Figure (cartoon, rainbow, N blue to C red):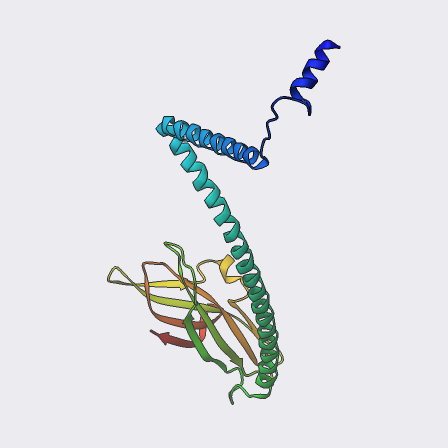
Length: 244
């Protein structure tokens, strides 16, 4: 009890000396403390940064570069996805156009076959003709090293039956004149019976029929001439040629 009385006399209202602390002074102390703490942190960071090894510095730089590249890759992925969508849309459009062109070509071929039936082949019974023989290089966008050269051919084969009832049955035979390393050579297609049995070499017609296919030439050969022979029973019944 005596002790409480002494504390009251010292710090209470009736104390001999009362000390008044300003709130502004308290705020200033807090601010100074915060500044001091920040300075200590910065000082510690500076010391830590100066004491790092070159490997640690390089590692940190690599991490920063990796984060930058990841961000750039994310942006590039968005651009690539957009470009891919555009390419797919264009591809679908081209596919639709190609399908329409194929349908139109099929219709034109049917019309051609119909009109050819109205055109007489000739005046002599059993006459054979090779008309509109065309050979042109195929358009190849990407050709690998050592790829064969391809040529597309088309020809109209005509047969005048007259009073005969049987159809003509024969074979197309190609003689290719090529130049290889300055030497003139000849290639004959088809090369064997198996190849001769392919539809593009077989001819069956009562009047007109259109035949087309592909001829291949070795990469180191230059095509100079193509001679087409319509063969029946090992005898050439009609001949046409194209010179380059």
